[in-house]
Image (cartoon, rainbow, N blue to C red; front, side, top):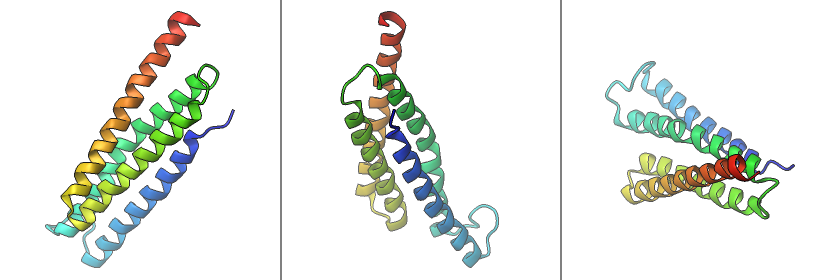
Length: 136
């Protein structure tokens, strides 16, 4: 079995590392160890990092679950994994960029993509679990 979902775990690790390093650098520059001390730029970077952390774990768990359940039952499951995985990563990048650049359109687009990815995964995972319970 090939674990396509692990690609998105790896990409998420790299994105989170970059977001975290950006927060650390700005904290050192601003000499702020806790909170944001009223620094609006630091606040936006902290929120970009935190928002990534809030949405990414459940998405990745659902993606792994889908891949695990779909591997034997659904031909071409890897297309779904890679399309939705890529969309989610794009959505998260757009959202983070919006907080860095103050571009509301990127933020809206990033959140829409994120929510669509989460909802698709939630529905498909539920369908796969019910299929396994009642038909296999």
